[in-house]
Image 1: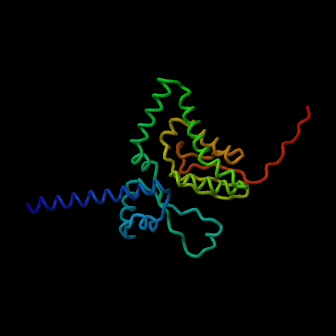
Image 2: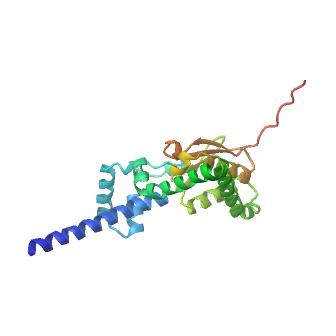
Image 3: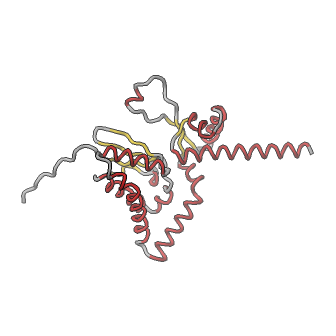
Length: 236
């Protein structure tokens, strides 16, 4: 009897451990790369407790650790920055595959049973929804830089964990998480329509440099911020 109770208690503890571990991975998945301290604060766990779960997830290749991106200002600060933890491709598959498979099946059905163009129309509708939700706010912003700030805030709120990196030619908009990555890998029309939405909202041509859907670690879009030189006239 005592052995049965001990086994039951062990089983409960393991279930609780697995649940907490899944919460850790899910929090990173929904918020983008986080430090151990960030995770401990969000989940109400001790640093020692959070690191045990992080070590377990890294050992299973569901998470990876890396040095955080450092801006010029942060590089001037003292001390070594804390490592951030990100979900790997294997981790994304584990936590998102069920919903993604359903979405892919639905879009395939739409394309085959109704019309091959229906997926493209769906992607365009999704793109229009993004523009409608931002266009009013963008109308009050006078500079492209401020519009980029607003776009980063919007995308982060939508679960894309967006950040931006400034360089001499413009801004790299980085989306560290993509809720539709698996679906977009099957239907690139979704990425193309999203890129077009960014371009129209910001009033400039933008260029996708990398996407999670195609196996890259981060979705990266280059946005020029400098003045665009006039086109040279070519005499006939």
